[in-house]
Structure formats: structure tokens, C-alpha cells
Image (cartoon, rainbow, N blue to C red; front, side, top):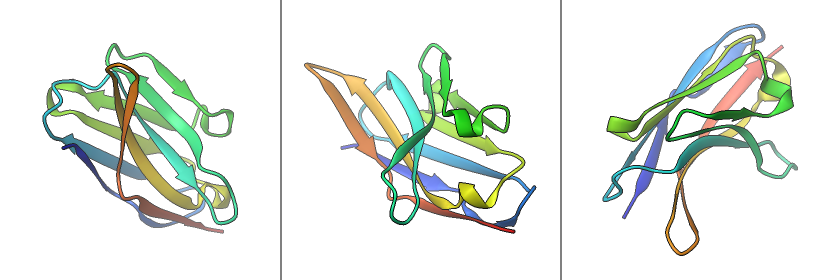
Amino acid sequence: QVQPVESGGGLVQAGGFLRLSCAASGNIFRFAGMGWYRQAPGNQRELVASITDGGSTNYADSVKGRFIISRDNAKNTVYLQMNSLKPEDTAVYYCNAHYFGRGRVDFWGQGTQVTVSS
């Protein structure tokens, strides 16, 4: 079984930065895609950024130019460098890893809290 494990969340002042990491250990050689989602209280979970095994990236409009996603395929690890953080970035951030078998198969981390104070 695969279990993504996040680290790197915490409390930071507006304008600061954090780096999230997620290692997806298990019996999957390589994930087709890895990414980060977030969920703030009262809101639905939303995509923040994703990256394919070929390195193609996708970002939510709200984080473009501030966040950078990267991955290490050999380690099945994905990173999210978050710069110029804003209070509205406050949320629980979830790591996602997925592959395609007969359909898409998703694995989720337990979430890490990011709090940005004003």
C-alpha cells in the first residue's frame, strides 16, 4: 500500500515562506502525477499545484508566480516551495500521488497545517 507523508507545514507571517515535502513510499515504481491540494475551513478542497513524471506543471491562478512545485522521481517525493505567503493561503495542505491502471488511482496524505498570520 502507498502512504504519502507530508512535512514542512507551520505558522509563518505574511510575506514569509515555507517548503512542504511529501514522500510517497510503497510498491509503486513511479507515479504519473503528484501534487498538492488545500482545504480551508468551510471551503472545498482545491488543487494548488501538480507535476507529472515528465515535469509538466500546473498551478492554481492564486499561487502562480509565488509557489513552485518540483519532484524527485527516484524518491517518489514532491516539494512545494511557497513564497510571499498571504493569509488567504492558510489551509490544510494535502499531498496527492496518482497513477493510471484501469482508471486513476489516488493516494492522499494526512494533511499538514499551514497558517499565515497578517
